[in-house]
Length: 354
Image (cartoon, rainbow, N blue to C red; front, side, top):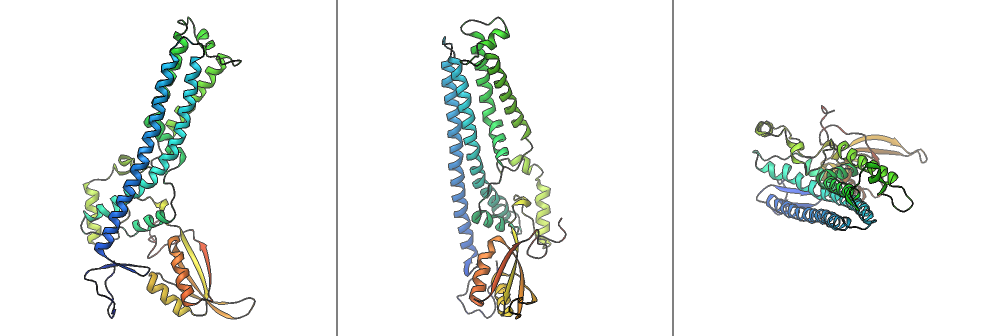
């Protein structure tokens, strides 16, 4: 938020405004826009949450139907249970993909909850300056906040592991009880044969697949990037923590984003601008983008002509604005955008952070 500058003859605003790329919004207008964005993201997250429930319902219904058919006198009815196991696995993979999309929308909602709306309730109202950067990057360059393994393990532990257990017990019960009660494990295993494939081999492969399922469920327990996992992320959040944030705001210390992990910070870039009008270009960058520029003397290797080179550190969402400003100020300029391993200092990560 910035106040109206002295000497500005444009339409006066009765309160601070949000100025960005030529737009000037009142604080109330910006808050209204955020509320509409929040409602839209909540709606989208709810839609994908319902799609998750739909996939689980498919798995439950097919499991119930297959178990009903399994306990019959047919010698091949146990194959129906095995086919259902394949269907359940397919539904799990589909739900894994859907869960990643749900987490994409859910993470945006959580970010606005913790770093915009919650900040309003912690005086003085001073949200972290990088929460908006993270949200802007996610809107411009959407990326899944969790991996396939985390999504797979989470849906497996929450729902599908129990379905696998039910299907497994139903299959073993079918082999043991029908067509008559088995007298030994060898007899029970022989009943699992499928055509030319021996029952012992079928049982061995099935046990191996169940071991893999349980290993995946246990091995992914430590993956906690899901925004839906509120307790693991915020179990250390207490009244003392809220008080410390409040005191930091009163001392003028910039608060950090609560929810967004460091890995989600916008990609940082270093731009080289070769221009013959360094003063005008740097002035536009400083005024319109609030970014600093360093002027370095340069010389064209082919023409031998002296040029100025501006070094400007940016984030990925600011490149388009930089190109527009340079094109308007010096159409003959040459712009190179290069990725930076890290940028530390005012406007970026603090120098004292590692």
